[in-house]
Length: 175
Ligand SMILES: [Fe+2]
Image 1 (spheres, protein in one colour):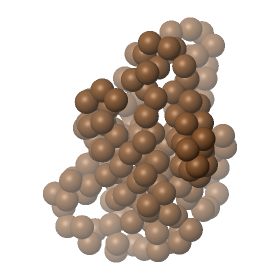
Image 2: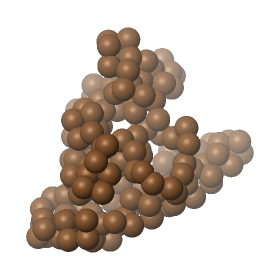
Image 3: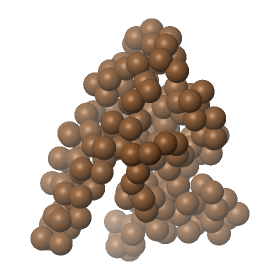
């Protein structure tokens, strides 16, 4: 794995851990160990994909399933696009990893909009992809609203909260 992808994965895992801990009282089925493991491993085949052209979310998911970790594999498979978007509870493990990845650009926590702009510039080359990206953008915005409904911080405060530059109790007060 390239170093910068390791750094990215560590930060995605930190964001996922924060969201999981903050939402667990409301959604007790969230599995912190599963979420952080999948977040750390979500780009496991990305370095390889630069030469093979493989779809790294699919092959990464398959790799973990083959190794005997199908639940981790399932979350990795859905880290780019979720099989299903729902504004209804509960918040799921795969929603947390998918969203966390959309808040981390390289190893920095940025706004959803900034990350999506980066993805658009780097990967969206054809008309067909443009349509798919447009849909994914709206679904990601809706997912952000769902996740933050029961958090006492706003999306723009996420970076400070994860990096513990604000009072960590902030994340508990509404739950
Ligand atoms: Fe990825």
